[in-house]
Each structure stands twice: as structure tokens, then as C-alpha cells.
Image 1 (cartoon, one colour):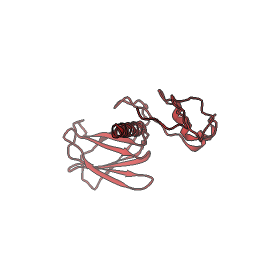
Image 2: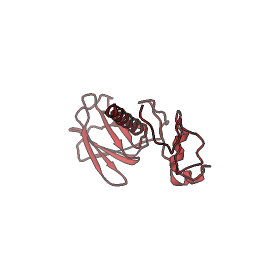
Image 3: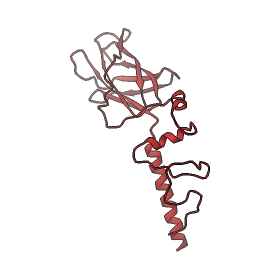
Image 4: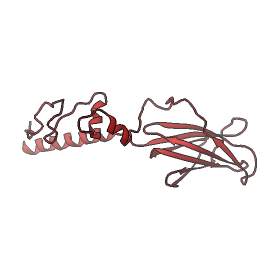
Length: 190
């Protein structure tokens, strides 16, 4: 009986940890399509993503539909360089990856030699998330300090998320919400 309750407690803890990790988003994505002057897609184009902050590089090829996706990107500014045989090299500057958002870009290639370069600027587009229904944002230090929170603690912001309840703790006796069991008690096996 004791091993059964320990096993149940272990499974419960692992499940809760998995749910907590799944609810936090810290990365974004950049997705796009490579096309030629007629609007047809360009498969197997070499696509390189450069981080403006770290100059880190990721490379991949566009798929048969001319699409590419760079996922799990740290928030920040990026640049894309696209090369394909028979086309000029295209540079897309000033792409921004935001938290829990997918930035979409269309890279038009022009016919020419690879030594010629075409600069493509990412224009101001509506911030409508069309790839999925998720939203996210980055909260800076100044915004946290100006919020009317009790201790200026960033973890208190988690209580602003829908369907969350603070369980309380012994270290923070002034919590508004109380859990079903006392925060300082030891759980008893079922």
C-alpha cells in the first residue's frame, strides 16, 4: 500500500511538472516562402538565418513547396539570406522574433547570378497571428517595476494568467488565494 501511494505521488508530481513546463513560452519562430518573379515557389533554396545580437547562424533548405521554418528562436532581431541556383542572393533584414509568435515572410528571388544581391526589407505588417491561436509577449524589467504588485516579484505575474490560482507558501504569508490544503502542511497519502 505504501509503495502504491509513493508511486501515485511520483506520477502526480511528474505530471504537474510537465504541465508547468508546457505553459511557459520563451521562444518564437520565423517562417516563410521562397518565390521567383512569377510567384512560383522555389524548392531547395539555401536559407540562412543570422541573429543580429549574437551573429549565430542556422541553415536549412526550403522544402518542395518553397517553405522554411526556423523554430525555437530567442526573441530578437534576425536577418535571412536566401541563395538559389540561377537567382540573385536575397537578404531580408530587420525580422523580429517575438515570444510565442510566428513571424511570416515571403522572400522574392530575382533572376540573375549568385554574385548579385537583392535587399528585401521587411515592411510594417499587421501583427495578426495567422499561423496559430497562441499569443505571447515579453515583459521588461521596467514594466515589472511599475506594476502594482506587492513585492515587485515577477512570479506574481503568473497569477494574471487565465485559470491560475496561487497555492500560497510559507515564505509569502500575504498571498490572496489559498489552496485546498495548508501551504505549510505535509500531504498525507491517499
